[in-house]
Image (cartoon, rainbow, N blue to C red; front, side, top):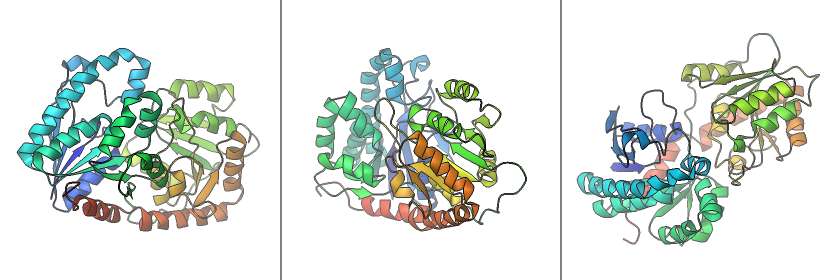
Length: 392
């Protein structure tokens, strides 16, 4: 099968941490013998690439020094920070549509898989029509909220588009959001994570329990709320490691100092895959305090929760978005309301009962294996691809 993915951004070089779950999906499909292509915008003049078994096609949409609408931050974030970037959007859509049409005619894909339908659904539809392919779109939730709250024409587009594509949601909450725009059933197919070949060893060493957060440092991740929750546990031994980067880092570091937590919180920034694995293995528990940002955006699924659970880490997370698809409260982790006091109580439960926490970690690892394994996910997507073009 020849598959064409159409995402917002793609890694520019080895080690570039951009949509790692999507990269893994494409690599797993290639391992099965599929011919996998990716159509994505250029960044600062970057051209086509061959990345392992993947063919990466990049379309130019502006002079190289202005091709920064994607990759470094989400396009909505960039537009909100500086609306002048919106001047690039017509060229972006036009260039991507032309490139998609040419590529569709050239490689004749069996399936075109779109990620972030506005505006890449236009690109995907052009490629699918040119190549006579099945059009499949994965929805993450954030793009639907953005269309409903910030881009009113997007709602009309989603109604039009929903009749022309097979629809996939990464979680039940995203499926419910997409339902008003759909005329056919929506498949719920999450992303997965690789399961470590061997069960991780128990935490070794001395010192206080280590809590871990991994993710972009943006408002919807709720790290500021986690710091405030931990400030309510001054007598308990704990240490927090924060892995990730983003626009909130300076503010969060300042907040940790203001809360007198600087000696107990380590901001580690971007780390290698090896260092990330080591962090999962030395941690006592994982915390994802997801909340709503100013655009009312939150977690579509919570892939980092799956990563943590694959390492048998017990997790504490808020009941937001797709997180409830991942964590079974009291069995594979602790779910709390999106309130600082509730977050404090959830962390305290994890710290006070290590035996129960370890049991939750083991059950979480098993849940990842059975419900979020890549083999199952690739199988389910292949079944959707095999339905052929909508309306056939």
